[in-house]
Image: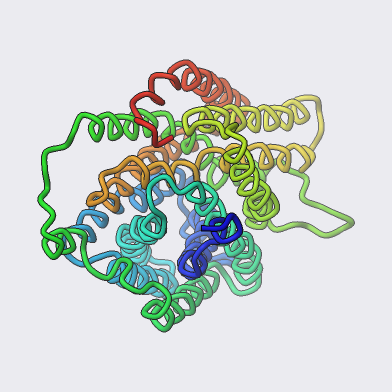
Length: 439
């Protein structure tokens, strides 16, 4: 295979990225409004739920956590019963239905039902799209990390637009109109997926892995020592990644409330809507994603590509540095400024994004390398458990921002994740050995 051909990615990668883009638009468009929707008064212009900040933080954390818990079960169902392709369809339909119900009115039953359906839909959708990307590449293919970075970057285009568009609609027509708009994105992406998948994906994801094993007369043997070691690495890094996401997801909770109350959002007389700041991170992913993808391929060619644990350790340290900039905003307020400069917030998002690109797509790629081939969707669900735990922890952290103060929250997160990043460095050699060549 020529060098030029070997570096090309299959069209299926871009179809799956586009499908994920519609779902991510809906999720991040809704997420950008969720905290504000819960805390606004019932009868004001935007029609909120009138929850307290503490209740809203806990609900926000629980909901987002469930969006990452259900993929564990969805991955098992896909592997054993329905296959990844059908699982994506079921997930997309459930997410659309949940958003539609959420937009009915601002009473408790549609609120609970809508969020529940969205969370369950994520369970079917999230692990299976990612597992199919892994199926496009053979073990040892140097394009794998690059492919997941490209996938990550492309769907972040939708993530960038979602808070801006849904936030603008919500500002004029109320939060529920923003939820309705988010549901349209799911419909568009799913219709495109249904039309193009048969020709572009071929047999990928069509049958459950269990059925494929029977058809190919493959017996499931007990896990070998190498397979057990690799699975152990997944769980060890999952522990550290949990705390990365607990800090990172403050963007939608404590950092959103801090932005609403304490950041100067005026530029030349124009006030930037708070939800729009959640577009900063995906914009930076768009700008930095391709350079990172190119970097991994370039370093791989010269034998200098850092191992997965090293990349993840660096990612955690960058996240911590980002929160140090948030401490700068707190210090400016303590110095007597009525509002803090938005530059502190933007710098925090920049370092958080670099950390994310060092950790998140690399983690997705790692699971497809280390998990046994017939269990990839299930272990992708296991990997998302870190985000489930992180959202629950992050929600609890956000619920104490009024009680403890933003300085203690941001400073505590910064110090903790930086220390954990250095711990990953210390154990990286051991983890590398347990990966048995799939680093």
